[in-house]
Amino acid sequence: RALLPALRGAAAPGAPARVVMVGSVAGVTHQPTPTHAYDASKTALHALTRKFAAELAPDVAVNAVAPGFVPSRMSHGLATWGITMEKIAARVPLRRVGEAQD
Image (cartoon, rainbow, N blue to C red; front, top):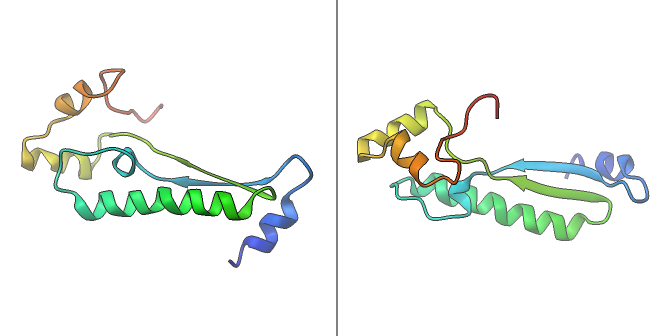
């Protein structure tokens, strides 16, 4: 709410201000992991993005990105449940997890 006046002030006809939310693939598709709270929070973020997009248009364009798995302490912790980066990569069209340069 605090930023809404600044966002609307930055908009111009045909050139809305922009907000990009960072979600996760865990918020848009089933994950074979017991990460219930994380998955639910990312699902909620994607729903909130759609809600803001509908309410703030046309002055503010609201979108979300949904990155997939990247090597991290969190993703390596999935090994506890027998889930490896190789198993994750096998489910990705590029057959690899994300990398820093992506």
